[in-house]
Amino acid sequence: MNYPVKHLKMKNLPMAKVTHDLQLIENRQLNPAYHLLIFKSSVAIPEVFPGQFAELLTPDSAATFLRRPFSIYNADYQLNTIQFIVKIVGNGTKKLCQLSTGAIVNIIYPLGKGFSISEGKSLIVGGGVGIAPMYLLSKWLTTNNREFDILLGGRTEADIINVKEFSEYGELDITTENGKLGQKGLITTHPWLKDPGSVYSRIYTCGPEAMMRAVARIAIASQISCEVSLENTMACGFGVCLCCVVATDKGNLCVCTDGPVFNINNLKGWD
Amino acid sequence: MPNLEVNIHNLILKNPVMTASGTFGYGQDFGDFYDVSKLGGIVTKAVSKEPRQGNFYPRMAETTSGMLNAVGLQNKGIDNFESVIYPELKKINTNIIINVAGHTVEDYVYVCERLNQLDHVHAIELNISCPNVKDGMAFGTSCPSATALTIAVRKVYHKTLIVKLSPNVTSIAEIAKAVEDGGADALSLINTLLGMAIDAEKRKTVLSTAMGGLSGPAIKPVALRMVYQASRAVSIPVIGIGGIMNGIDAVEFLLAGASAVQVGTANFINPNAALETITGIEDYLNRHSINDVNELIGML
Ligand SMILES: Cc1cc2nc3c(=O)[nH]c(=O)nc-3n(C[C@H](O)[C@H](O)[C@H](O)COP(=O)(O)OP(=O)(O)OC[C@H]3O[C@@H](n4cnc5c(N)ncnc54)[C@H](O)[C@@H]3O)c2cc1C
Ligand SMILES: Cc1cc2nc3c(=O)[nH]c(=O)nc-3n(C[C@H](O)[C@H](O)[C@H](O)COP(=O)(O)O)c2cc1C
Ligand code: FES
Image (cartoon, rainbow over all chains, first blue to last red; front, side, top):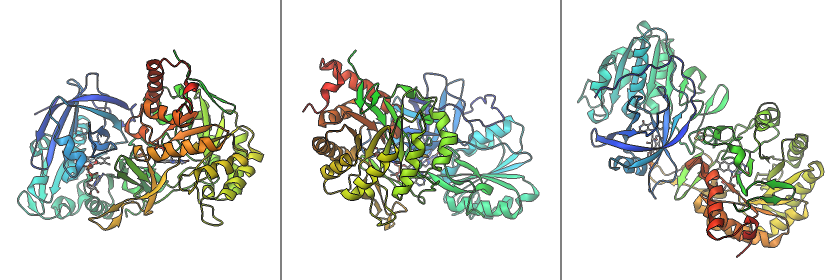
């Protein structure tokens, strides 16, 4: 399914956040663990930037108390829909993926600071569910005439989703640890990450922390810039509880408002 | 329209609903959701003498109907508060109550003396759950130290002095009395209950600090009981806190003896929770044909 790309501004400015009841209009199971959830808003959706996220409240669930954060996978300003890719890991994600179309979910969005635009060619490295913020990023870079390649990695073929959608925007390659799809091995062993400095000026990455740290080390060794999208346990998602901090050169900062996207140069212990 | 105005000592609250410290930042972050001037008051995140980095990650664990936090009073200190945060607070047209934390009596006195100079700070709320560097025990867990701290702050702070009690004590009534004797104008309770979460699969504690503060609906029955006991032990007003998610929860606290309430963890789940708590109380009064919220206080 192709969605029209709205004009996306160059600069990633924080927008006013809203709390809205959205209606689930499609719950598409991509494979046993991953679902694509599409929500429709009855009012115009706010402009969202790649890397920003939303806090979803699981309806009537005694099993979950707090909201759950999810990256915004896609947004359509004509249809007023926003999309999430959800990987089932526990009670909250299971409950969300079991919702039937028509269900109403309260969502706070857009939250956090997303990716920044790069000069020159960039490489997108997404591991597992870490591909979620990368689709909007691909659209954004394309709209702004930036060149980029996309590398998707996972443990098995089940972790590689929506390849067709991604390949519409850039050259794409895949790695899996079991070798059932794409090149066999860890994503960091892919040729594009051998000497990335000779081709790329920036790496954008999101995925398991061990993978992001390995990618960050490669970026540092090749002296190119690297933006990572971090995860953390969040209670509020909008900067008031101070539960989600990460150590940076400016002291402890909130992943939910100062991130989730950080330049690795600003993170402590990422070199 | 029933009357919603209540008094806490010299403080006039347009309605009995405030926000709890550490769950509302300094008010600004909620401006996108609603006009925070509609609240009876805003209690800020703790302010200490020096900047504090707080505890290591992970700082949060979700629990059944609640959460544990180990934030550790992270804040930028009183200098930053005065120069950066205070000018923003001045734009908010309701009672501004500053939550104060410290490790020594001198720390508390220093911060409160500075806050006494600021016109748009209407009251302070002393967080006496902080550990005392001298003996490692929280000020609020022994009557003599709670009284001594209140007396010391009372000398330098001349507006409304609220003391926030820790529930991690054997007798809440005795601590309440000790703080009243020290010269407090009002009490607020409860702060978080000391708790713990363990990940059985990993055989590890979930929080970096092993133990943390439990909040949310899980603590409401304990909070109600303590408000009930404390309000009967003292003659100063009591502010009820603990697991309030809506107007009915707030009414329960008023009935237990609280003159006002604070909404905490609920703000994370529903950013409009404090505002909806006000309308919830109003609905309740209308339904029961009560025309003054003050009639509910202690009306069991
Ligand atoms: C900014 C941000 C963006 C995110 N984007 C997405 C997304 O687009 N798609 C998606 O599927 N998930 C995303 N996540 C992760 C998602 O929020 C968690 O998987 C979800 O909260 C788990 O809820 P649960 O109730 O199913 O699991 P729980 O029952 O809470 O936990 C089950 C297991 O998952 C682990 N877990 C829980 N939360 C996290 C987390 N934040 N990171 C890593 N492990 C966790 C727990 O340790 C536990 O072992 C994002 C997280 C953040 C912070
Ligand atoms: C994340 C978090 C941070 C908190 N920080 C403070 C604080 O700085 N000072 C304080 O006195 N209480 C603090 N509290 C306690 C709350 O103000 C309140 O007393 C407690 O959470 C119980 O109310 P609730 O169940 O409505 O949240 C904090 C609570 C939470 C959840
Ligand atoms: S999750 Fe509350 S401050 Fe980030």
